[in-house]
Image 1 (tube, rainbow, N blue to C red):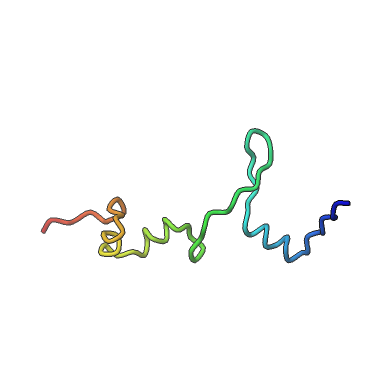
Image 2: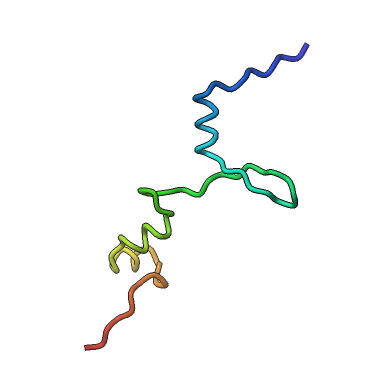
Length: 71
């Protein structure tokens, strides 16, 4: 005989809710992983706000570097 699936505890349900989000694809509900957040911001936005030009250059994120001002 096959084993019965156990029901999820409220803690397990809350963990799953935080890990996945439900979206509709072709009229059907689908669970997809949530995008990672840093301090409540998406990773790209966090880097854009907090990285200095040296770090951006070292990690080859030149498109995020502020434009140079000619003096």
